[in-house]
Amino acid sequence: MTATLFGTAFVAVLLAELVGDKLLYGAGALAARIGARTVLLGAIPAFAAKSLVAVTLGGFVARLPHTAVAASSSIAFALTAFTIWREPHVVRDDASAASIEDATPLFRGALSAFTAIFFAEWADPGQLAAAAFAARSGAPGLVWLAATSAMAAKAVLALALGAVLHRHAPQRAVRWAGASLGVALALSSAFQIRG
Image (cartoon, rainbow, N blue to C red):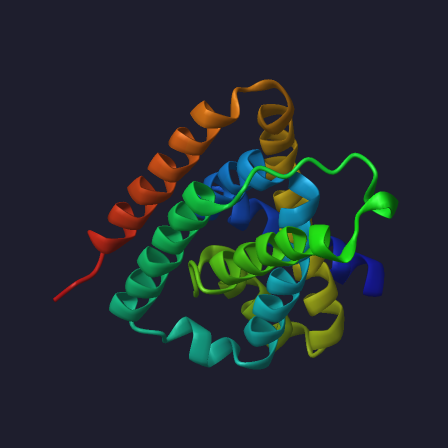
């Protein structure tokens, strides 16, 4: 029962997260600019927190006003665009050799990723699936673990593309493309705000 519930919740949340998810593109663009590992340092805690909210307050998350969700997503994507544009290019091949001063861009990048992911796309299909599984199963801890794992798997897919771009594409082009994508996603979310 436990393995079946975990597997079912994992697949359901992963599929829900992959279908038409704008955050997937934003995380990939952010990774192309500041590096996949840095984004992952912020993404995993953000996904864990969002999954915790979903399994704890599932009914509330499902009833969030569409306007509030669209507005918070728009702001989060705009901040992501700003972060991509302003974040210095940091290459980290040897993390053990990094000094405390070098850790500041890493921390700032991870914090930017956490903020962008945590505040974007609330009550999305993945969160709603996690909330429904938690309510039906009576095992919120297991559903939280499955949902967090599914969202992390989605992030790894996006970050893999971002890492390739980070290594092989000219950083100026990556910065322009990533910031433009962030602005486009922010505008897309803003157009969904109902008056």
